[in-house]
Length: 440
Image (cartoon, rainbow, N blue to C red):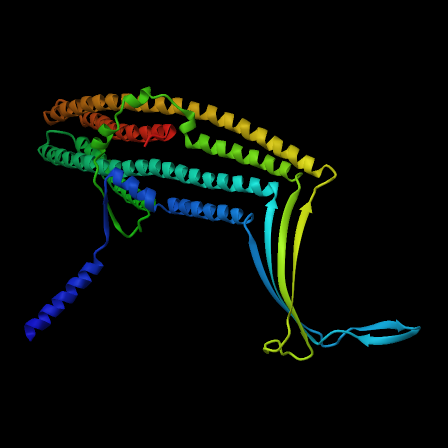
């Protein structure tokens, strides 16, 4: 019995422990992009916009489909109207009607022709396309931001490793220097200079750790993950940089029609063309038809639910033709405004095309420069490491001052950060270039 109780307690303890464990996520950059495009908050709303546009399209379509409406009316004439009728010169007051009246009817209506309706159908299709393009643009922007944020987290990781390594080396150098100072072989100033450098390293290390926390939370937000969940990024900055070195992309031609901003500009122009058509269509006649079916019943007592109550049916067919004749030039004014708006959209599309071409040239130049900087910063890092190593040896042997060593260390630390930033720039600049040419 005792063993059963212990096993039960262990079972519940394991359940509680499992519940307390935080849900964790692990992503490569590719997986992070795919997850964000499915779960990012802006993407989710963009999907809802498309669904709303589909419903709007169907709503517009139904205007031209048969419409059936039913109506039931009841009237209680608690005081019947009195009318005066002249019988041979003698005015006589008579009351007509019944105290209770009820009517039930159904109307079938059909729009036969309306130019505005035809334009409305085209507009609904364009509206749907605009929503779809907005989703594509949102997905492209989210992808670029995810790449940038992913790189920022990796940059913080690498910076922490480098700073910890530098801190360890500096602490050993400081410890050795203190022993040499105790033996009276060097001045106290050498120790103090190293302490200043170590203090700066510690401050930078703590700052980068805080930046990593913020960058990691930003990444969770982009992925649509709660901030209290754990997130691990599996790619490494160096490997990611090498996979983004692509000289072939620099030779690709820019087709502006593939760019989503240009496509959105085309949609804007199409919408203005439809607006012009709409204003012109208002000068056309509209034609509709309706068929009515109904029953009336009259009684002085409310007995409409009785089986022997008499109901009188009626029906009619109506056709309505509306012909616009003269609007005091109001329609003409609205048409001219629509023409002006169309010309403005054409100018905006031309401007968008020129801007995109300029952005492409800049993005390609920036990416090419980032590749050059990657090579340069790597060479500079190798040189800075050699210089710092030589000054470290000279300082140990008493051939260099602490100022010389500090200068070499600061140069090394700067070269390390420049190289990390150069790797990140290659990733980010390529993402910008790919977004412009719409490359997946």
